[in-house]
Image (cartoon, rainbow, N blue to C red):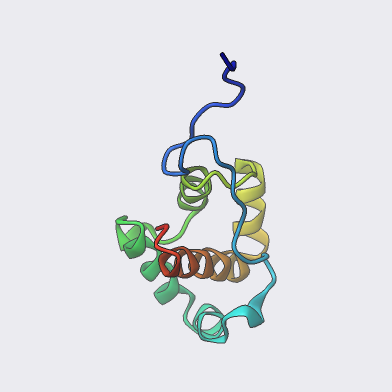
Length: 109
């Protein structure tokens, strides 16, 4: 009998821990998302909210990034989410949208 050493995570396939599909500053990984995040961040924010079945008026926020991160077992903290959204909001939005897109392509979203 094996003892349980980690708690299961919602939507992460049990105790599986994953990571972001791309880095915070990997803008060139998807130029379409990068351009949208640079010139139309509110539109990108609404797309992300829609992808996550949230209200577009809320936009992408620290809470949404934290929800997404915990849903997929991505290591991090609320403090890190806050710092990314406050200091590098466009990069954080683009990273979140790229991650959603890649998980959809892998049928894991």
